[in-house]
Amino acid sequence: MNTQPKAYLVGGGIGSLAAAAFMIRDGGMPGENISILEATALLGGSLDGAGDAAAGYSLRGGRMLTTDNYECTWDLYKSIPSLSNKGKTVFEETVDFNAMHQANSMARLVDCRRAKVPVSSMGFSMQDRMELLKLSNADENELGASCISDWLSPAFFETEFWYMWVTTFAFQPWHSAVELKRYLHRFMLEFSRIETLGGVKRTVYNQYDSLVLPLQTWLAAQGVRLVTNCKVTDLAHKIEDGKFVVTGIHCLRQGQSEVLAVNDGDLVFMQNGSMTDASSLGSMTRAPAQRTKVDSGGWTLWERLAQGRPEFGNPAAFNRCIAQSCWESFTVTLPNPAFFDQIQQFSGNEAGTGGLVTFKDSNWLMSIVLAHQPHFANQPADVQVFWGYALFPDRIGNFVAKPMAECHGAEILRELCGHLRFDLETVQAANCIPCRMPYITSMFMPRLSSDRPPPVPRNSKNFAFISQFVEIPGDVVFTVEYSVRAAQMAVYELLGVARKVPPITPHDQSFRTRFEALIKAFK
Image (cartoon, rainbow, N blue to C red; front, side):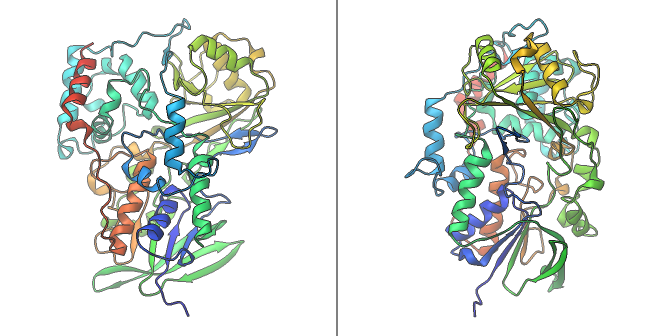
């Protein structure tokens, strides 16, 4: 009889996958003692990517990567073998790929005249500089639950810097001032190269194929139980010596209720909240359904557990207003090279070297990015795929007289071609799949420090949270790194691992980095 402790991970996102790997690699836990319980048919959470050339490819988005930061992510992927480059780790594969395909955007911003906007200057006035400096130096307790617009004047939001920053990281003026301050410090290296996106690193394929699948494959080889179509509905628990202890996991599998016993010594890790919860896909002839929290399942369990337990955080701070956390993306599958040829000629960038192209005068604030092809592991050589998104899907388009949220794929392509002054023939036979995500920037919502629990909540004996909605001082949400760091912190604390979590690299304390950022701010 196996009496060794077991671990259960609720949710199959990158945080849970990383936690399982850390338990095996650094905690010495046998893989067969670890179970990942995922409500959908696929693991990977928000790092998704699916489809084929016939039906069309779709991915909700892709998080920005950098090898100058992301200490925990690369610590993990230095141990995970690549699926496409035998003998190399995912980290080595990524470094080699980016050495061959370096980012240097030559068309970061495009205006209404279809002209590339010169961005050698950030467009700051002296007032903008002073306000930004004050915000970046403010104490987080002073910032509290304030919004970015509480600290920066309206003119700031018309600067070239803001257009580039907001479309790179997806901020809005009504989002948290604390989160913007953290980004300014964590990504200070990117401040001086924001117009070229020179610090952005890419994976060989989309992040599902390049990050999720190799890790999932490695975990399966270690014997980890990967349980899909298993929705966790509740956690049975007790209070023992003042500690919160999970004793059972209630779940639904194939319509049947089950209870998994959590025995003494077992551990439970839960994804609390989801930025892609209630997302929906459209088609070339149908706009995505406008779902709400009623249609979601990712928030319910956290809300139930947090009721009467302030140490478990405050979900309402993040999911209370869809209008402030929603935007829409789209993935386009092309059966001929006409669009890629024209955009490469216009931008001056080969696919995979340019990064985001933002149409700054777009009512939707639309951006597109042409990744290196193929972008999917199963993508045929004569098919191209690109991705785009818009921050204001509730606004009427410039070329389509309706909000993006009400548009199907063909209308989104018409709007895009209008901004580029491309004939619609360039996207003939294209398949554009739009995706609405009501909570995609919910982690940016203004909040107090107490609204996010630490990975291992106070008074918790065998339970931890892993997600974008835990509190990690100094790190930034909406990144792969945040989920992986939360996983590493939670695993090391509950398993008593002596190895230290890699510290956050203090680039903002570098004299050179500060000097280069200052020079950029005064151009």
